[in-house]
Image (tube, rainbow, N blue to C red; front, side, top):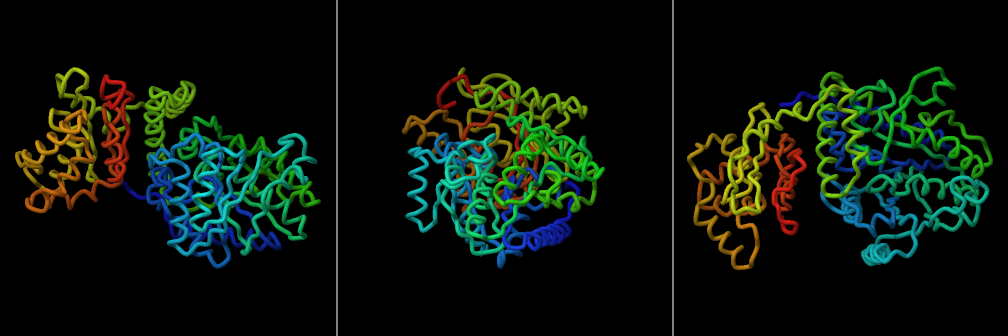
Length: 501
């Protein structure tokens, strides 16, 4: 069982106090840009063991009497159907999930902003879908004059073109399903409209990573660089903060580069010079104060860097990212003396690959390994009957339930019935993926006690670490995700077929 290195209660207390203090100092209304993932922040949970993935939502629940949400989504991401990697869903679907999450917790959603709107067909369809479900939608456009012509930016032809969202609470949290959602531009546009109406408002930023009060070379901050390797983010010492206060604080390149421009725009909008002396000053993040065991966090962060290496390596062979992204993470691994094999399940999976082909020459022989919470490693291999991921999960729950290896949790009749169905509808390959095996297991559990005992152990696989010697098929990937298993894989396709591999 992984040790905890983070205390949520301390964090929530510290963070609530800091945000409320910033609201009070704004003398009116505060637009708080929420970077990163507001809900289901599994990256933070992996890097900071003990961190609750939805702790920021708990924070908003405490503030809900004074807070409301503006949700931003970039029209281009809707059009390109950009995917959120940890859930395998598009950004527009993630936005719908976020809205449901806010509503279920009694957090007021003021509206959804489609940013850089240019009448993209998919964005218009998404807008209509939301409106017909009772969600207010606003349009923001590409900011004319950005980034050099401040006079045009802060004018009726710049931010003035955007729809104004009239807030009802003193704290307006501006968030989005991912980076590049247009959160900052939305905050500045709202400031422009407020000051035009004689309403005093302020701006602050909430980013979990990088952690400003940890060392520059701390693995937790390096894990952020690894996670944003495709964006080319680089952590650095905030030069403005060092000059103003003589103190070291960690920020990242985009915030530091944008700070002089941001100060100019805010000064133009408000008519006053900004009270912020550095980009770090703009932040309200207190996550560093929730760390209780630095050693645990360092080791967890190093493992996250390795996970990101595998993820980007797979995305590269799928054509989803470039070689430079992979190389950046490789350099980070070199900096911290890490290798792919430092992830314990990697060698176990690779060494378990069976000889021969499981079901015809188009498929590769592959294997998978999973580390249980007590440190025991279980493996699974591909066969003519099922995928390696399916065998892995069955072997893992048998181990947890104390069921003998000789006991089959799925009856041969059940497996053959599914294979016959796949033959009838010409669904290849015939061997069962993890999703199919989980359904079959649930059916067998109704009549076979060992299957029921094994199925009861599936929840114990959540947050366990696994590695596949290949990239999973869709049914394996979604099955592993639904079980909450942290999976990495080697950048190899499990089939030589180009379609339906």
